[in-house]
Structure formats: C-alpha cells, structure tokens
Figure (cartoon, rainbow, N blue to C red):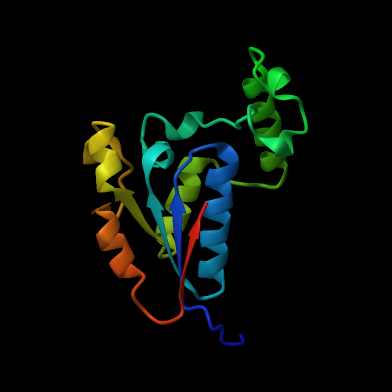
Length: 158
C-alpha cells in the first residue's frame, strides 16, 4: 500500500442527524482502512450519537436541508422526517450499513478513538454512564486540540 501523507484524521461531530453521523463514521472507518489514525469528538447535539438512549433513534433533518430537494414548508409537515428517515435507513440496509450502535463498536474495535466534549456533557446534564461503553473518555476542547498537535494531522468538522 502506498504511504499517505495524512497520518491522523480528527472529526468533530456537532449534529446527530443520521446523514451527519454516517458521514463521520464512514470517513473515520475509511481512514482506518487506509492505515490512518482516526478520532471522533462528539460535541453539542452530536452527543446524541453516543447517548445510549438516543443513538437508535436518530433522524434525517428535512427542514433546512437543501439536499432534500423539497420546500422547507413541506419538510416541516408532520411525519415527513419519519418518512425520510425510514427511506434512508431502508437504502442503507440495502448497502449492508450497520446500525449506529453496531457501527460505533466497529469503529472502536478498529482503533478509532471516540471522545465526548466535556462542556457539552455538562451543558446537557449527562453523565459518563449515559454514554456508550466504547467511549474513550470525556475531553475538553483544549485536550482534543492537543491530540491534533502532530505532523500530518487533519481536522474535519462534520
């Protein structure tokens, strides 16, 4: 395998919409498959992706999402978000995409580091027991930035 100039990828996930979560997970998984270190920092609403009670109930955002190709008013109608979410999950199943909880286990097992944002955890009154068991810890943003302080490291906000 040719050597890549990228040695480490750090992803910041701030929204737990189904499309954002899978985008971050797929990129982190792809990095590991290429031999690149990968870490995901879950902050603000991104914490829902690692919250034991919420990770199986993530949705596709239909309002304010230009990729939905529908008027905002239509996306806000009752049931539209549920329909869009069901359709996306059906398409993901066809591609054999694992559910969020299983994907988190795969990422952790492959060496992806999973971090929760200390400020967001405190702001939403969460405790470590509310979060997935595979979590590598709770960090301040400064601690996370220090993890990026190496050559050939890239950070991506999802």
